[in-house]
Structures are given as C-alpha cells and as structure tokens.
Length: 257
Image (tube, rainbow, N blue to C red; front, side):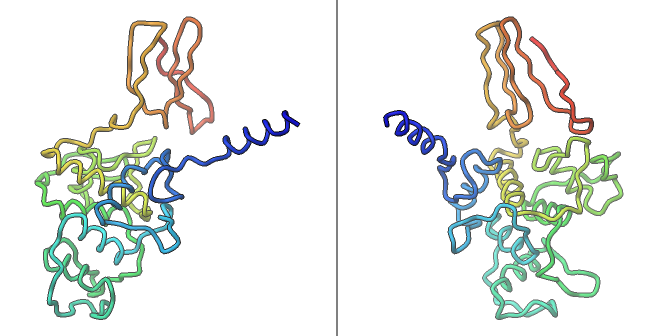
C-alpha cells in the first residue's frame, strides 16, 4: 500500500505544469514569457476572456495598431474624420487606426483602404514599430540586410535598425522571412525588445539577458549560453556545448573544453 501511495504522489508532483505567470498558456519556461508578462503589466496587450493569452494566434492590422499605439504612447484621442472607406467610427479600432494615421506611422493601401482584418506580416509590423519608436534610421542601406532582404526593399531601413538592435533575429540560415504573419507572442517579443532599446539609450537588446551562466567545476572557465539553442554535456574530463544540425538532422560539436 505504501508503494502505491508513493507512486501516486510522484505522479502528481511531476505532472504539474510550469506556470508562474498571468496566463496558463504562457508558462515561465515559454520563450516569450518575460515579453508577455511585461506588456500585460503595462496594459499594452491583454489575454482573452477565458484567461488565456493565445500566443500562437495571428494578429490582424487593427489589433496590431491598438498594441503599437498603446506601447509607444501614440495620441489617439481624436476627434477624427474617417479617411479609409473600410474603417468606421463605431468600430473599436477606429481611434487607434486614425491616431496612427494622423501621426504618420501608417498609410493605407494603394486603393485607399486599410484592410483592418488582414493579418499583419513581419515587414509591415517592423516598419510601423520602428517609425512609432521615433528613432533615427540609416539614410543609406548598403548590401543585404538579411539573406532574403536586400537594400532595395521598401522596409530595408527598418529591418536594418531592427537587426542592428536585436529586435528581430534571422533564422538558422540568415533569413528574415519578412512575409510571415505575426503571432501574438512574436508581436509581444518585438515590442518588448524595442521598448528595452528605447529605455536603455538606444543600446541593442542584450541577447544574453536570459541566458544561463555555466561555471565549470572541472576546468577554470565560465560562459553564458542560450539553453534553448545549445545542449550542455559534462564528461569526466571535458565539457561539450553543441547545437543540432537541423538541415541534416545530426549533432555537431561546436566547442569542446
């Protein structure tokens, strides 16, 4: 009987999910946990009525405008006259869209519409966020910003600022994938990092901010590393940090101490 009770207790304690924040679907070990928590605390972005955040839900242009206007303190008190034929005064997002338009951080499409229900992609989002941040942009972009973003792209200056300040990062192959739609978690992370840049006199967002510090007991060294990307293995006489080769599905040791 004692063995059965012990088994049940172990099962209960090891089955408890990691959750120490505002939303059950953004636990403390979520990659965007700090960003979501800060933006929720500041009233910039909130969860749904059921208490979840929906980190993987896509963000449309109307929602993006509300988040950006709130994040960067854009005036949206009005009164405003309708400008876009698909933006109506009785819609909840009307003051946010018009506030963004009046301060010059957004424009409509060539046909004069705003398309509030369209999902916002990374290129559009970066341009709006960088402009809303009121930072100095490079007057001339030299060379490729990312592997898939050359200097002639309409959003190249904004992508360059975001790259140089670690607001966004390329994938494992150097691609930005600017046409990807933004999730709520990705939106929260990008705004969180941009706010960090602004609040620290324009210094790039510190990539090692949440990295683990490893202090070796075998050899005289210590190092910070990203535990989400690198795996640590200790042997009797060496320490290995390695990252999986995603393209060929094999592991390649990068540095051995």
